[in-house]
Image (cartoon, rainbow, N blue to C red):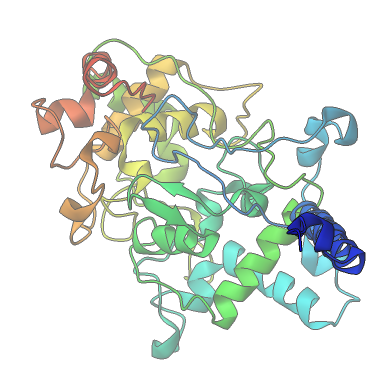
Length: 375
């Protein structure tokens, strides 16, 4: 008997079954790809956003990866055309989310009243001073170029050079709690943090997720190529700042005795030395776009040199010391050139890091680390 070809012996039914299985597998893969794509574009937060917040790369300090087709966006100016007050706009709303939004607004506007050291409930003391979040994030985080909250909800998580890790928006708030507010972290799953998140999301609702809008962060300042002139800064302070913040820099208290109409700029009740506002270049940007009262980015009331010198004068004063700042920036090359405390990844003095000139330090980091620093 002659030997048969094995291929000729294979049943036709088995071949059809194999082909059918392959077709089903391909269909399943296609369905999975479609489902993942829909989920990705439907998710209301960015899955991964890289952001060099501390100004340690050539990416601007508030930028975020991810854009939206400009044809589908509202006009960018419209994000800041009016101030929204949820106590008024949501006063008829009694659902839980609306109540959280309203409470978040109150926490931002009157931080000292709810979680400050004189709020009357020792268990609810989280800040170490009597400032309010809105003292820096003006108009309760709704004024452009004053580090506004508008749009920020959709730009997290993001990279933080100070911790050298991807951080959440809750982490960012707690950074302010420990530094600008000279206090301690809020529980991330507590009522207060939940309310702050609800408010930030509410003011960001019209902003495309991940979009950095015009008016984010601070205005740019042309940095003078010299050391801060403290004498000139004192003159500017007396002429343009003292009427609100006091000759002694201690601000003006609210009539109730809690909080400030105009906050102190140094001393025990101000931000501590680890805060971003204690960096001359950051403070100069804030001042240029917002101070004195009534100034805007379109109509500044100080020049770049005045903002630079008065920022140096303000930050030359004593303020609370934050513990463990030597642990900031595990990757020291990511540290801002104007950080007023060491250690550093260079041989420049602490005084030069605090008061400049800064261009020489910036040039060093661009040459040695290929990092184009802006502050």
